[in-house]
Length: 117
Length: 111
Image (tube, rainbow over all chains, first blue to last red; front, top):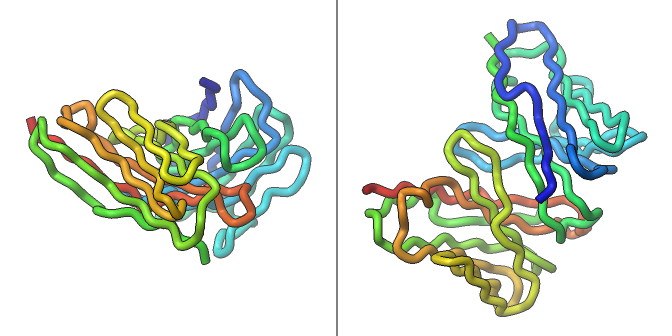
């Protein structure tokens, strides 16, 4: 199957700093990527849809100035958590699909465990 | 809004016992997908069901899609310790673009 690579897998940062997470589709082009947040023992919460060459679409309640998304190429989307605080500590996962609709398999990155101290 | 509900939240079984997780959507779904997430890992696609009443099998796993296309189930026969993880069902939103995940069922298997 297709491969989505996410980096870093773990990051610890100080409160007030920013952290960038990269999501790459390694063997296919993804005009759209999705960013999820997962709290311990909970489901995947969609944060935003990353669109290549245009602005991301954020879900209700997700601060776009807090979670900056850039999708500058067909194989790379980045999520930057700005001015991170301990409550931003979480597991962040990206995904991409080969097709445009939600009737195709989603391929997930390995996830990034962010700890803000 | 559209919801995908999944029960149970947790299930502890003895190795060799069967396991079933159930998924219910508040709306009719064009398709339903199932994913497995191992502890510390990321979700991995298992299968997609599209047709009303569809049943698919993958070795010890049996997936069903309800006649009304609003519910689904995953049944594992004779669980093994390798089955440990969280099983998520997921369906498309009404726009057909986003994927809505159920809360997941965490399966614990005791050897």
